[in-house]
Length: 320
Image (spheres, rainbow, N blue to C red):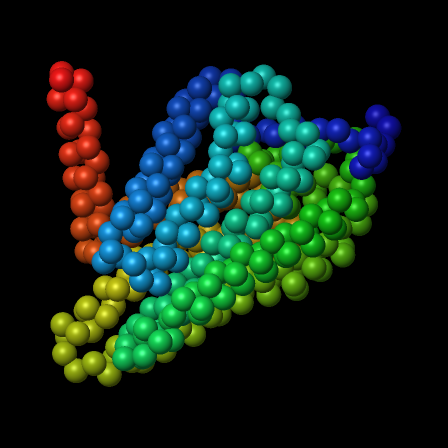
């Protein structure tokens, strides 16, 4: 077969999670349920925060943004997966592939920067509680949010521009369920040295900056909490961080397993690991934050009771 350069390549084929036809409907049902739970769970979190005055503070503001980003993050990947599960021709156009890759990288990085912003918020709340309102004011929250969105979009744009310069060989089969960076790079017949260097330097810095910020924040929190004399005080301080720490561990654990290795070592097992932070973590976040946070639990109960009372009015209205 002859070589085809970038301009001649019009589409890729996504192999997905399984080659067996009998698995496709089962996988479709599974990921449809996960996607719907993700949408409903995160929408409930956003609605509860915006409807309850007691949840109008920086921590829950960032949590509501995180929930919105998680919806966008999964929507970039899962709907196309669902279509491919039921389609014989599992193709994605070249332009659609780059677009998916761009928004996947952007929303994934926004997630990590929002987690860092939430860690800063917890640090100020625990280590400097008397100045919390003045430090974590609207201007500070707006700046943290602006940086959390702007930098990831610029980082993703740089990566996509470099991918767009590559030449691809005859094979257009991506061994993945979406257009992730490493599987696409493996199809290139031109040198990927520059993009790998950028990924392991600028890309690593982009990912590690929020992680280091989270690490420093929690080290300072730990030092402050250990100084609290009462055991009850220590438990209360740690309880405000437990949900966030769980999400950080899930997200960074799976991301580091997949990406902090050379391109040549990327294997089929990484597809399974990718599901953790692209599909499972956005679904689990609402449960983690609601089940382990009393204020959030109360807010959700209040919202659900309000929805029930509104739904209860419909039959009587219809009867009249």
